[in-house]
Image (tube, rainbow, N blue to C red; front, side):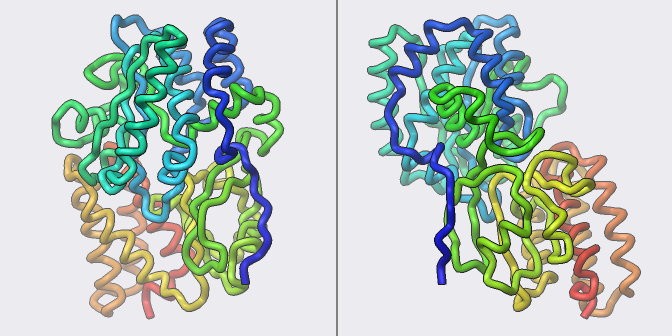
Length: 392
């Protein structure tokens, strides 16, 4: 039976104050708006958690004739489907955030990089963008937004691979530095934020930094939109306060037999039942401390699930989606998959898992981008906490 769950209503509240927010922003200095974002504690909601206000500040300080604002709507993380709902329900909030950012950094051009599987959203978005452009003309704001359709590559959710894709090249990550705020799309300073991050800027500009900062804890301020799936009587999209314990999350969303929660999708961490109480959903310290960041995906598994099958599924995904540019990721993902299969079949002893854990950590350190670096998150946390299921 579904529970009567309490959720916040900042993101999905159907309010249309775009014109008032833009007029208010135009009357304030760029530094004041940036300081509000910094003060709010808003961090990127894609999972990396880079401070949004600082990103905008760096791009504003960059010297260039042309700058870009890009909304990353390439929502490809398994188990994540919240950006789709944001773009469907409140696209004007995302566009408002893009326009304010453009005004601050000195950009006249923006793009929404839309996941190819979300092609059905394009007609609605184009209609909203047309109306938005009319409003910008009234306000004498020179900023145009286009939609760029992705082609289904998970790697293009990584910001620099996304730029390469938009430039007509193969979607592969670039070396960093330089960072996008200095050298982004077309080699120009670029601010790239994901859908949810831009929608949150709308709330901060409307209600103020203090109201946003009152939500959450310490370095994890504000609310977060979660995509809840798996063994739960309450699947769906929920906006909740940052800083809740995983035990509280399972109490609300679990089926009474939850043995693990995959926080952050395939590239996130798997937390076993014994660690629910001590684990907080937030940005402090990742799994090494007591908190875990997430781009939004929360997958719950009960006792009927084989964690070997779960890990096998994740590795299948990574093998398929690795761009192949760097050896640690290209070869490492394949060897991890072959390795757990060999142990399960009895072709390798259980001690072979220790060697695979070393390989996973090597991938974390040596892979070029977040895809290869994050494979160790799910692999190590599942193998270490459910070793018996890898063997028998």
